[in-house]
Image 1 (cartoon, helix red, strand yellow):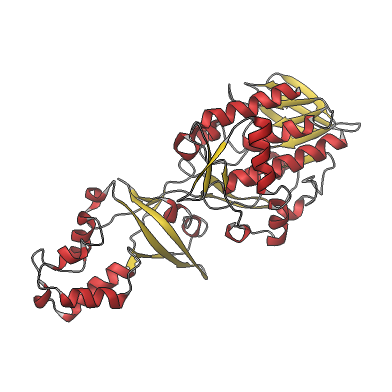
Image 2: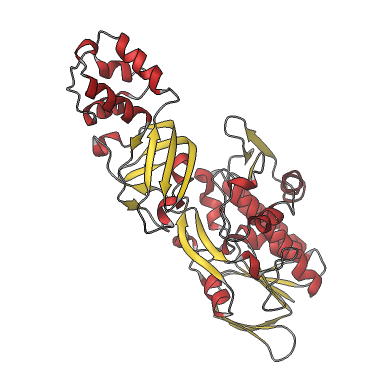
Length: 400
C-alpha cells in the first residue's frame, strides 16, 4: 500500500497518480476536509496555472538544474489537459495577467474536483488523522504512527506542505519528519509575504494600489520586480512586493528597496515639472493617485502650495528621487501567517530527480512545498505542486 501524508495540492495529485498504477492508496489528512490552501488561493478563485512557465523566476538554494528538471517533468499543456479532461474543470485565461483560472472562478471547484477524482480512482481518504511518527519497519516498508493507530506501507509520500498559513493545517510535520530522518535541509523562511513599514501619510495611504517597479539590494544580491503594489494598514502588499519579499525574510542583514512609482524616467519628470506654472503636486497627481502624490511631495520637503516656478533645485532633485527611486521604509514582514509559501526546505540533492524518492531512505518520497523551491505568485507554485505530486505518485505506485 502507498500512504500519502497531506491532502493539499501536491498530496491530492500524488495520491491520484499513485492509484493510477494499480496500487492501493490511503491519503491521510489532519484537517476535516483538506485542500484549504487551494480554497483561499487567488482570492477564492484559485489561479490553477500560469499561461507560461518561467523556471528562471523560481528561487532555490539547491542546484537550479534540478529544480528546472522537476518543473519540466509535466509540461503545462499536459497539466491543463489533466484539469480540463480528468478533473473536469474548464479553465479560462485572464489575458492581462497571464493566469489560468477555473471558468467558474470558484476555488472550491478545484479542491472538490481533485478530491472527487481521487475518490473515483479508488483512493481512500482518511481525514482528522495526525501523523505522529514515521520509521522503517523491520521488514520492507514503513511504519506510520497516527492518531488513529499504526499503519504499514510499502511506500510513503510526504506532501504536508511547509509552514505558511498555519490555520490551513500547515504545521511543518513533514519537514520535521524529513529532518529527523537525516535529510539535508535549507533554512526555512516565509516567502511571498506582505512587508511592514510606514510611508508618508501612514494609514491614509491604505487601499491605494498601482503598478510599480521595485529594485532590492542586500546580502550581496540585487533583484527587480514589477507589477501591482498595494498599501495596507500595516505596510505593503501586491505582486511586486510579494515576489521580492524573500529578499527581506531570508536574511538578517539590511535590505534596501527602491520603488519607481511610474514608468517615467528622471528626465521626463524633470521636463514636465520644469514646464508647469501650477502646483507641483498637481503635476505629480497626473500620473499617481492624488493622496500618494501629495505624500511624496511632502516627503521631499515641498510645501503643499509650492508652484513650478518657485521650486528650488534641491526640492526638485529630492522629489524626482522619490518618484523614481523611493527608499521604501521597512520594519519587518507579516511572516508565515500571511506567506503564500515557505522558502527553503528539503534539499533537492537529497531526492532522486526522476522519482522524488529520498536518496537516504528507499520507499520515501517528498513533493510540493516541502522541497527547496518556490516561484512567484501567479499559479507557479501550483504548477510546482502538481508536477512534483504527479512524479512522486507515479514513482511510489510503481514501487509498491
